[in-house]
Image (cartoon, rainbow, N blue to C red; front, side, top):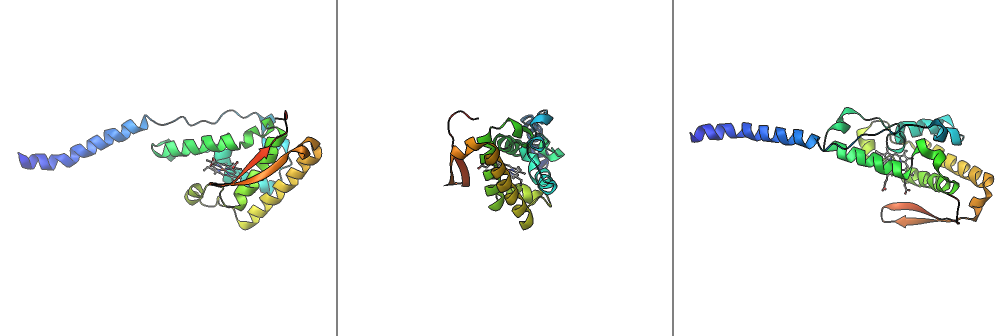
Length: 188
Ligand code: HEC
């Protein structure tokens, strides 16, 4: 009797684990790709050189646009919790599909943040870059992105003189560089 029990136990354990795993799948958060309004995309609002656009598409869009590529494993809990949360946080901070809805100050602060994140190697997220071959930025690409953010920032201030009045400071937060903009009233 005792022998039967010890032999059977591992199988029961597997069955229980199997059910637990299936149960876990019920906790999958929603994977979204909100509809894209072409009029609001970054392509419509700034002069995006093809090499910059290519980097954004390849290395940033999964978390910073409404065109997220959701491979099958992002539907498996607990991986799904992590990927969905990255995308939600990423979109909240910077969404290329919603660029047109940003005010001038937000645009300026996003440009500076893009430059800071790329130059410090914080984006694309290292954990993502390890999992996806070829998404990490080369040194040349970082330079291209940096130069573009400066150029675009200049164009922004030239076309919108109000931005010149904003005092901007860079702060080193515990997480690294975060950019904060002290905004003059009523332009957002
Ligand atoms: C795997 C998802 C992922 C990818 C890919 C990714 N990011 Fe992010 N990004 C995030 C997350 C998550 C945050 C929010 C981080 C936080 O709040 O600490 C973020 C934040 C940012 C911010 C805001 C930082 C700030 O301090 O305001 C910028 C700018 C940014 N990312 C730029 C980029 C650029 C440029 C790329 C491509 C080269 C990129 N990201 C690729 C997930 C990603």
